[in-house]
Image 1 (tube, one colour):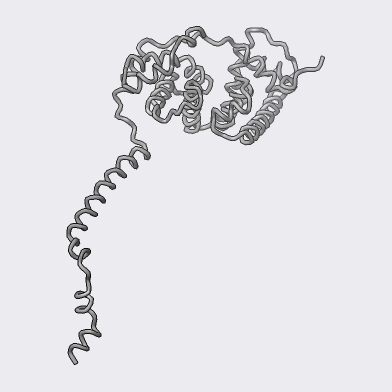
Image 2 (cartoon, chains in turn red, blue):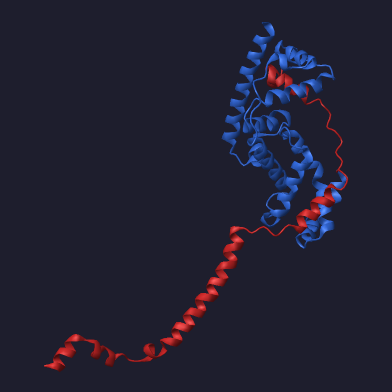
Length: 100
Length: 196
């Protein structure tokens, strides 16, 4: 009779024999689940990179919105002015022409 | 298994996410047999199985938010258990070289038997065979040990091993091939020692 390939090597025959060991009955040790559950529930929540990014990106958005509002408030007059007078005053050619 | 079918894992997870401690206990009770089976199969020396099982459960709870539900929850937990065992195994040094003189009488008999091509083993040889397997596997690097444990002892498919370990199938096959070749050399060395 042809032997299955796994039995053709010493390792195959050895593992075949080792697998015959019956699986022992598993019982949760007394107090194990209570201890693990208590530890897990008392542990601080794990901070992931995604959570950090989420948290700080909202804060960054808020801060940048405030900065935009403040800078708009301060430069409101500059934005709304036509700027023609300022241009004429700061232009060196205009200044030279006026001087001559 | 009838208990498993009545256990509503999704409802339990929902309660755990609300920090319900009783639900967390139920979840641990439900998954303990699965986790301890993996831990016992890969248990590194000098690490208590209960400590390693606890570490697996703590990781499970800590990463619960990452569980997307794309795979069954027990499978997801199995993967955490396997990777935890790999980390523990990697931290260990390999045992000194195994010699014929290191084997017990029963182990030596089993080894002679498999080396001389006798396939029939008495039932009480199984324990010695298991011990011998553990001694031989302790000579291998952690990833090699893991892959042979899953493939040859637990008889999982290459796809299942790939899924559990996160390695691709080619890596699993290559590791298994190399590990078996190392064992073959070890068998030859032991055989020479037996004959000398």
